Image (cartoon, rainbow, N blue to C red; front, side, top):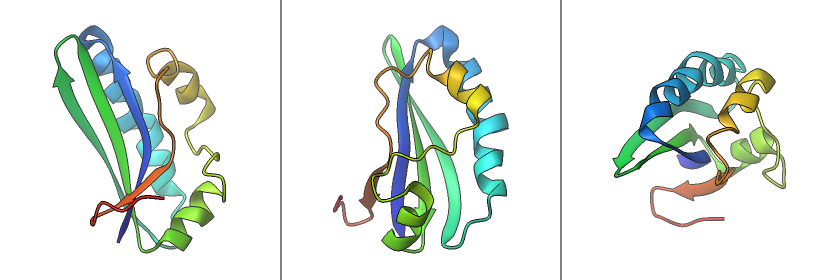
Length: 108
């Protein structure tokens, strides 16, 4: 299976709970509801790093073709709900969108 790191975000510890709540209650359920072919599941990882909290959202797909169908050829498509985007952008200025990685560590 291929992993698509949909975004990586940072926030301060005081805002981390709100950030995580929005992702878990608004973003992840909406993405899962799409029920796209080749999509397996989505996980949110959290790492506390001193005065920052890092989040990574990882999505598992059956193939690279399934990722491209989800993100578009340029990986610029966003499936984050607009209301959630507005809130996450307050914390996520350094976001990296749609970096594709797999279990062998090879990227695209």
